[in-house]
Image (cartoon, helix red, strand yellow):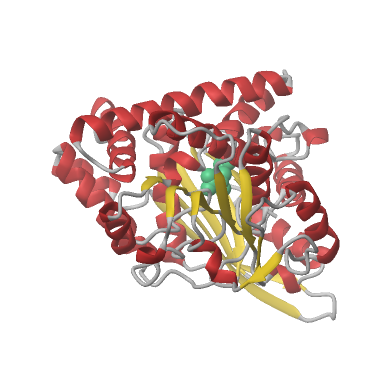
Length: 423
Ligand code: GLU
């Protein structure tokens, strides 16, 4: 699954957080009031009920959302999450962040997000399939390759994307691979997509180390959340010389100051379901992973985990946000005061949607790229995005989060200005 469950749900309402970020960016870049007003509202919110036959014969009715925040720069794009804590406000915030994210990496999309309030860990594969297919049928008129292209997010994966692709195609009467990204390779998925979030995260970490005059050789990393983004980031960071010293998941955390064997830890997690119980490490309280001394801390689970309560204890030099919204605005202020260089979510985890874009292009053209082509193109996009943001940060004396927001919001605003308000 795409991410691991985190400790504490966001203390602050994520929609308010996203609106506050937009308001601050609007102020800094001198955004026209009309554009600010438009971008503060999603273009479309769809709420559906999803009656699903459970294995014991009961019918459960789940609630699902799809929020399309903006289409200024292209079709809406963004993942779907399955989680018991999903709320409409969270999905709205995540859709808005997708708009800025696609703009930061300069790919031709707007932003969207979907969510279903459910507990996928307690559901059978059949239940998940029936729920996914009904959710897709409810959305069949609003999604599509030219309209809105879903992808994996927290606790959804390529199997879920295959069900969506099949359901949408059956409704249309022909095969539509470009309706989702993050599909299995056999259905027109892209090479490199499943690793793209972690790989993109490591590309921006490398650039950050470069501008800070640091080397990955022997640098230390702590990873909070050991799902797709966390495992890939840890593995690729180890490949370039990092020592991954601490890793956590929803149950606990393991620590080894000499560096964990990431491949062995991934295997242990696959076999037992958790990182705890891993032989070559000491167990530490789960949330201590955030406060161990290290060069790079990677929050790779849910939002709202770095808060004003724990931010002052963080002893990392760099934070790379593989998760969406892990740091609250109050916490960011403390991190700034302590000189911690934060690579924000809309930059650090944009590798996933970037390779989603490559997948969509490949699906539309039925022409497929090699893994080297995908990874090379991903590196180019991530390095360019890092420097666009870094340049703004240096020029305006901002932290990387504010700089990334300004880059993203400015690009969306420029498109909006050129298109004008219809009619
Ligand atoms: N869910 C991922 C994100 O938050 C990927 C979205 C996509 O590929 O469309 O960026």
